[in-house]
Length: 248
Length: 248
DNA sequence: ATTGATAGTTGGTATATACCAAGATATGAA
DNA sequence: TTCATATCTTGGTATATACCAACTATCAAT
Image (tube, rainbow over the protein chains, first blue to last red):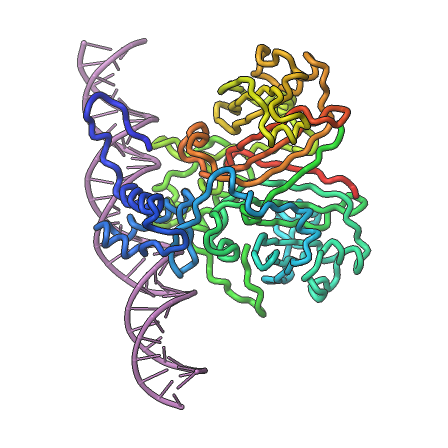
């Protein structure tokens, strides 16, 4: 994709080996020889087929993944990703945060929970001191069985004693209010597009894109004191956020 | 960020070397020791500093780049990236307005403009009849020379006679107000993650991710009548959106 | 049929080495 | 001062090798 433009025939520098191998695989995918969710050659297999070293083959496959043609399932192997076009990526299942709130078929899985000492980032967000105790829990949200988001929430432990003994398979804002009288009033959200780690991608299932939306949120109580910091990774196919801006 | 929660100490597998090196660099960037556009240690230098091999150092730096902390200038070296452009969509619909206010080095290129008949989607959004005349224009926005978003806006022609003869290299909301007395008051935005077409990716430059954020927006006037429909594709590395949620 | 150990495959990490080409810099001649 | 040349640094590509941990498939014992 970056040929030098000189005069005549000009070899344009022979394509690097890993790009050649990659191009062949892309060709296979585009032509349909390799179908979505089918296994790609393993690093070692590709190395032998293409007569290149494993590290070079690996680079070709990594690159393929970065461009969205493939995905990985940990040590199970690499597979062809679903093809996507820019407009229909979320048309199949448009999703809003509102829908999530209202969805009946919502299940929440607790991936882990524990207490730890606030690091500098969390401390500054929650306006506590570095080292103060915080509770952290990871949760996986599913709608109709399909994983749509992974959430990490961190709250000030002092304000929510023995929080982890409560049932976390529910709305935590409701829990905060019911059990601790902490009412959330206002918050700040940040939305950006990020690469999804292989680990998280495993949750979203084979064929999900390697990119998704990251939502960071800070929830304040009525006194505008922040008490909860959340980080959510949304499966790109499922994430769609709408905002109503206020009259100026 | 993925601690397993078992019983006591639990080694959680010692962090890979390249991640350790990467974490140190990120720390340096976040703490301000390494400033934007400053050179990062070269692969060989990092290898020596961290007492790891060059390939491992390279992996750390590559990873840093993938996460948006760094960028490369060919063989010149690697540098600390500028922080993401943050845009609070709940307070300012117009990115141009924001750029102006914060004296961001913004340039706008008109890719195309013209009038056409509203299709059913546009007609229903703008509450006009299918076939009614609308103006459409495509614009490319650059900040400090780097393309960050491509926009397509469609407005009701009847309300903005000879709009296309005006200078479109400015904030259109300002133009609407100054020239036509149409004041934008409120709007609705939808943000999602989409694959970027090859055509659009050409604008963002090679090396940008094949995914980005799509923002659809509908702008209403003071009577809450929609008059402008916009669709923006943002380069994922360059942007993030923040939202301030209102007290319930 | 179920279980359980085993061997093979796969990706993940890490190192050492090699050569190339594009930039940057210093050096020396004009 | 200016310009060309040589040298050094930097990333880019490529290979060979090694060991680990997770997963799969197999085959034997129950």
